[in-house]
Structures are given as C-alpha cells and as structure tokens.
Length: 589
View (cartoon, rainbow, N blue to C red):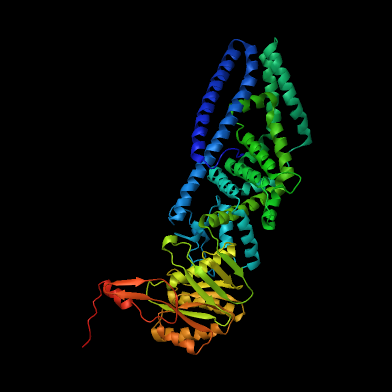
C-alpha cells in the first residue's frame, strides 16, 4: 500500500475512510446484480447481451480493488490508533497486554534470566515494536548477545538518525500491525521456491491459442448462428490443457505465504525505497531492497498479485474466464518466471525486514523515552554511571544513582537494609548494559564502560525435576564465572546475596575466598550481602570498596531514599520488619 494521506490524524482519516468503504460496497453490490441480470437474460433470451458481461466484470473487479484499497487504509489507521494506546501504556509501564517473549528465556544464559529481559513486566515488553515471530526472535537474539562495543557504536549512530525519521518508524510499525495477523510457516514456500520449474516450452502453444480461440468461439456464438455444442467442445479441449498445469498450481497455492505477509513485505520495501539515510549502517540494511536490477517492492507486489490469482481460482468469474481462455496456463507461466528471477532474493529480504523491525523498535523506544544520555565505550576496565535509572520503574517514581569503578577498584561489596534498593540497583546497572549493547543510550545521564561481558547470579532457584537445590544452582553459576576469570576474560558480574543458601560461618568464609579469587582476575563487579563482617575486607583487599543502601526507622515506619552511599551499612531493619509483620520478640532474662 502507498501512504498518500495524512497519517498524523488517524481518527479523522478513519471516519472518511469508512464512508468510502460503504460507498464502494454499495457500488460493488449494484454492479453484481446487474451482472447477474445480464447473465440470466443473455443466456435465456438475448444472447448478444452477454457481450456486456466482460465490461461489467471489469467494472466489478475495479470496485473490488478500490474497496480493498480502502480496507487496507482502514486497517492501517486502526493500527495507528492501537499504537497510540500502546504508547500511553508503555509510558505508564502498564505492560500486561504486551508480548512477554517467555520462549526466549534461557536458564543457563549468562544474564538474561536475572535482569527481567523477558517475561511479565520485562524489557522485551517495553522495547518490542516488532510484528511477527521473526522480528521478535531477532530482537531477543540482539538482547542476549555478547558485548560488542564496535557493533553497539554502529547501531547507536544508526538509531540516532532513525529517531529523526518519525514518519518512517511510525509507518513501518503500523504496516506490520495492520496486515500481519495469524502467521503461516514459510517453510513450504521456500521449499517450493527451490523446486524445479513446472513450465514447459510446449505450454506456450495453448497459452497463445487459448485466449485467441476462446475469443473467436465466444464471438461466433454470441453474434452468429453458432451451435452451443461447438463452444462446449472448446471447453472440453481446454480441460485437457488445463489439466497439465492443475497440479503445479495446486502445489503453489498450498505453498503461498499469507496475503498479509506479502502485503506487509511489499509495503515495507516501498517505504525503504523512498527514504534517504546518511548513516552507513542504515544504508547497508537498506541496500538489499533495491540495490539490484529490480526493486523488492515491485517483485513482492507482483507475487502478492499472483498469489491472489492462484488462491482465488475457484472464484466464479475466474472459472468462467478460465474455461473460455485457459487462464491457468498464463498464471503458471507468470509464476514460474517470477520464481526464476526472484527466488534467490526473497529469503534475504525477509531477514532484512526482521532486522529493520528491530531497528524500528529501538528507534521508537528511544524516541518515546527521550533517551538523550550519552554512552562511551573504552578499552580500560572501568565502569562509570551518572544518574542511572531502571527503565521498568515508572519514571516519576524512579530514583537515579551514580557509581564510579576505576581501574584499581574491582569489587564493590554492597550491604544494606532489606528493601533498601540493593538488588534493584544491581539490576539497573545490568539492564542498562544490555540496552547500550543493543545500541541504545542508557536510561540516565551518562555511562562509561569497558569491554566487559556481562554475568549475573541473582535468581538461583531449586529444581525438583533435576534434584538441584538453590544453593547448588548458585554454586554452578559461580563456577561459570570462575571459569571466565581463569581464562582472563573481562567480565562485569552482579552477584546478589552471595551464598545465601548456607550457614553464616561457611557463607562468610566462602564469600571471602571468592572475593579474593575474583580480585586477582580481569573481572569487575558487585557483590551484595547481609554479612556485614565482610565489609572489613576493604582494609585487607585494596581493590574492594564498600557501598551501601540505608533505611531510616521512625516509630512504626521504615523509610528509604534508595540512594547508594560509600561505606558499609550502619544499621539493618530485619528486626523491625519482623515486628511490623507481627512477630513478637520476648527478651531473655
């Protein structure tokens, strides 16, 4: 479809569109009844009147095309209105109705299960503007990818330019939402594309004779004293030739993608062909669509039209024309010509459209959230965050924090009261590192980061099916981290409530041993704990620093400011929390 109307006022345009649809439906109905009357009278009384059948059929098809064009416009405008509603829900962080991407979770992945990347109230729900399974899968792959500063810089520059193309990112998403509904696997379609051509040169003879002979027999029957038997014989001969192409056309019909997919791909290609980019990364993504002897939009539009013909061969008007003029043979010829010319490219186009869906998602998210912070990658093993925030917390309630980890500081020991913000802060850093690796700016003022691979151990749970306790699950995670450390890989780790599944004595001893082991590696990260005894290690291990979150207990209330502070936590609130929950402490005599 071509967007030649004002898409900034979807409600107004939709009202006008619905009026046109009603008019087209009425006109189509009137022509259909006239067409039926011509057939009845012509076959029973006035034979020459059947000549009107052909111009009336053309007029009927014309009204169908106009009607379908307006229906496409209506679907596009409804998609725009749906997007406006979704934008408001994202702004309020009301993400219940959005696709969760649960299938992309990986228990053994270095970080995705701990950082709310997928699932209910997840980063995937907030970022995802893709419209099909391929786009979702591609976005998930990028979110879970290893840190690549070079690629992140390229995407960041591309996203910056793309956010300025408001019409393009709006139209691209709306097109997909309008036409891609229930997806059909394209496996059989790609298999069909790789099959040998069903066309034979000998089919050219009936392809030429069919329309010519059909026209002569029809005119002789309509205008002359010509027996209907001869016309019947012509139709019977046609059955023989049509039978030659029946099977390959049925195979093609079964293999064809959904109409909505083809309509979407054609419209996407058209959008990409009519926009100029300066960024080289965007130009490279754009080039497969029209950097050839032909344009993808025309090729895909042609396939859409041919698919429509193949899938609607049982239509009454098509059947009449097919029996008279052997149309099936011409349809197969066009289809095989298309396959020979475009089959090598269409899978590549689909993959390119998946990448564009992700880029549009990132640009739309960046634009909606006004991500104007800065991101710098460095070869030094440092991490600095200024006014960093968690993207999944409502902006008006989110508290920002600063953190600087120079080269000489490798481990932050994070202590603090319950519910004071330790885990949320760690997840804030982790999820922002995922965002900047995607090419986004951070949710904050500034982020400086070395070439760290991200690793987390925060949600270790038991698994009865595998007979694994939560403590063993945590040890397995730590073992993976140590294997990275032994290889000398730079890793930024986030370990929450370390070794919480064992007794205090073993936990403190084990934690100290792990801290010493990690301090001798290229790893850098944060370890949270309730064991305040570990804070004394700052005096023994120069690369360790204490930070904490505090709480303020006043009568029956516990107040939090959720701000990170240097030094160990001076007080804890577990005793007070238990009292508030009804546990009565009896003093010992």
